[in-house]
Structures are given as C-alpha cells and as structure tokens.
Image (tube, rainbow, N blue to C red; front, side, top):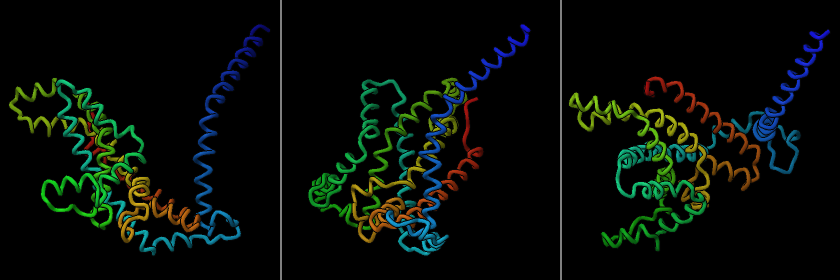
Length: 305
C-alpha cells in the first residue's frame, strides 16, 4: 500500500514538473507561432494572389504568376544589382574594423574614450544619423563638398543625385554605421588569443606581418565569419538608409534596394501580392547565401584549441 502511495506521489510530482515545463516553453512557442509562423504562411498565400490590401485574397488567386512576372521584371534585377553593390562595403568595413581593433588592442592613454566614440554610431538612431549624413552629402551646402572645395577649389560631386556617387555615398554611410560594432567584436577576439602564441613566434624570428597573417587572422576568423554572415543578411535588407537619404530611390532608381522596391510596390502601388512574392524570393536568396557560407566555413574558420 505504501509503495502504491509513493508511486502516486512520484507521478503527481512528475506531472506537476511536466506542467511547469510546458508553462515555461509555451510563451516562446506561442510567440513564434504568432509573430513568425503565421506571417510566413500568410505571406506565402498572399504571394500567389493579386491582393492589394483591401480585396479578397481567395477571389484573386493567380498561382505562381507573381513569381513569373518577378523574374522578367527589369526593375527587380536592377535593384538586386544595387543591393549587391552595397555589399562591397562589407569587406571594406571588416578590413577597417580589423586594422582599428589591432591598433586599439594596446595599452594607451584615453583608449576607453576612443572605443566609446567609435561605438556611438551603433547605438544612435539609424534615422537620425541618416538625416545627418544626408546633409553631409548635400550638393550645395554639405560638409563634404565644402571641405573638397576648400582644399582643392573644385566643387565636389552630386553625391546623392548622381547614379554612381549615390552608391558610393550609401556604402560610406553603411561602413561608418557598422564600424563600431565590428571593432568591439574584433577587440574581443583579439583579447582572447593567448599571448604565448605571439611570444613563441617572436622567439622563432617571426616578423610583425607574419604574426598578423599566421596567428591573428586565423584565430579571429570566427569573428570574421560572424560579421560576414550578419553583414550579408543585413545587406540584403537595406531599406531605411535609402528611404531617408534618397526617398525617391535615386536617379533612375540607382539607389533603390530590393526591400525598398518591395515597399514601393506593396505600399506605394498597393501590390501586396507582388511584394509578398518578392519577399519570398529575397528570403530564398538569403538562405542560399547563408547556407553556402556555413558549408564552406570549415575550410577557413579556425578556433583556439
């Protein structure tokens, strides 16, 4: 009898523990269903319709017509090309961040203040700093053109009004905005490298360049890989910068990105179904690029053993 009671108590305790476990798991699961799973399924259904936000999706079902139209849309391929061009800023930003981090990874007076100043753009409002840089790049009164004219006597280019220079402007801004975060991550990676590696290499006569190439670069490769992945994913989703600095997408849509075009089609032209199809194509591209990087990471990403 006592054994039966003990077993019942254990069953009750296990059941109670199981209920508490479900209670802790339920909120994130419900959140995932509401904020992730449902929007994905909804967007997938919408991408196969001519939904404009007001009409019935089911009565305007067109199958894969939006996807077929998208593949022949010259404007889509143009904005995709612009998006890829902006990604040239990713390796530039990573290289600058690495060099600055190496320089800051030393004991020097005022280093904490310098680190804080570099990180300020990261915690600043994207819209606020985009407006600030829009005035920096202003053709008539901008700070950049004023400096160019003062130094050379020649008026600078139309940074946001020219098809070439608008891309350069956006790359400069995006590199500046993300530099502080990359520096902090690289500093963390540099400080985790054991000093014994450098001391042993110096005893063997290794130069500063060899130390950097054979010790520093390989051992911060996990940070480089992380920055590459997040940079590529973020690069495909560039939107606010263009919307604030070049609201019309630039001359001949030269500054527009895929997300900007998606926004323009969905909310500017009320083509929600077409915009949803574009979103799914973009998601597939991001997934493919990310999968390729994860597949190849074993060939160049090293860890400290």
